[in-house]
Length: 215
Ligand code: GRF
Image 1: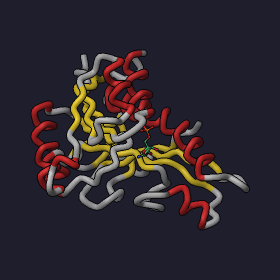
Image 2: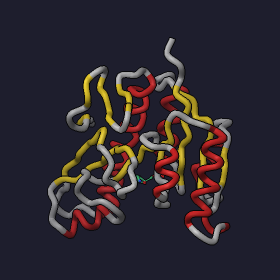
Image 3: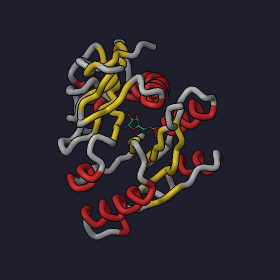
Image 4: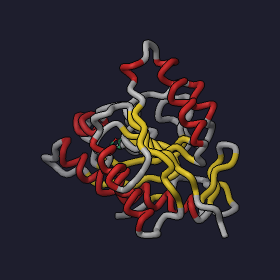
């Protein structure tokens, strides 16, 4: 029997992606366990979601540290004590430094609201609207030291309609996101997808391009 994946999920806010992952684990769709939910904000609603499902939570508040390096070190020490297979960033709104990324090389995964490599960084929906784009989407990628630039594993796209607002795009994106992490983690959990040396494999072949998930 394949061993169940051990995960840490990191959040900063609402945690709707966390909820989708929890639900998919509880229904048996994902073969994994969430060892801990970490937030940099003690008020994050996602922490309530985690506690409601009996999960271990840990707040490491960046305000408690003078430098980003000190915050990263505290985070790294905690994460090492858990020693998960993967660290899932699900709306975690702090940029991680190079040291912690190296300490968990190819183990950190992020979900980003754009079709990477387009629209790295913040405010992706507004920028896509400002540029008159006709489609936008969501990407899941491995985290590397370059922001939002690691290998993309999965994408899903949606059309931008005339008159759409940022909220319209966010809500369309969220609907896709709530399928994406569960599907990705189900595939990592049953070893359909794997990560070796920074390369993502689909069964035994290197993944040539991101898996495109359809709604
Ligand atoms: C998502 O839109 C994700 O793309 C971005 O942060 C948001 C988190 O939403 N990285 P939630 O906290 O999971 O509801």
